[in-house]
Length: 289
Image (tube, rainbow, N blue to C red):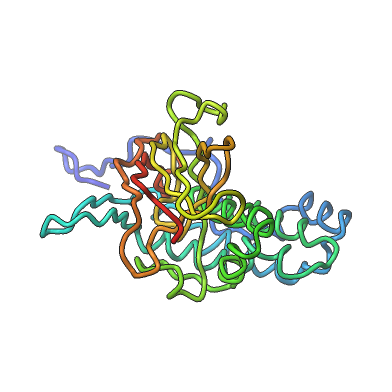
């Protein structure tokens, strides 16, 4: 109330809000979703109910709050350090790391691959569904890490150690080589300007370094219009080898600890999914070893 000219008291509020719903948060993403609980039980994932219950509380509570923070504080790109050295560094807000850590420790990228139990994919899908209610941006590297495992399994001589670290329930967001970490994340770089979803039109070249064929070393040179989550520890990248289009595993660091020939050119301007960095990159003789 405020005092008027004649000494009377006038209400300071201009209007009353009565036709808007109450804020959703905090909420329980598992217990409040009858359809989700019934579907998980029907499709064979009922054994995961205790874990899903715990993650539902987090997704509708602290992770929900972290999602807002991460969206309001998008990643920042630093191509060079203050001395002019190229570093290709993308810095994320602590809330983004909180989201990633919680999801990886809960097994979002790894649950179906670390146990052959029936319904594991169902349980993992429910975890992902609830996590995306808190933040969809971090769902990108989580899903890419999950999806890369079957491809790496096709080449165990190359992918075995990567698989072990990608399926570990340990998150390490530090900017250091993958082989120094207990847990890693994996990204993908496939889309090019001239082809879009038609990856057969890709022009990135894969030059043989030592032999040819599956598991051999190649050097990649080209441009990728989209590379989401460029701070992942490694990427599945498409390139034109002498025998045709193929998929390559590309670490962000060389085995000796130096940066690989993967240059982040810029971060994409986006309307949504702002917590995660989507980038444009160039590959300059980038290689696995």
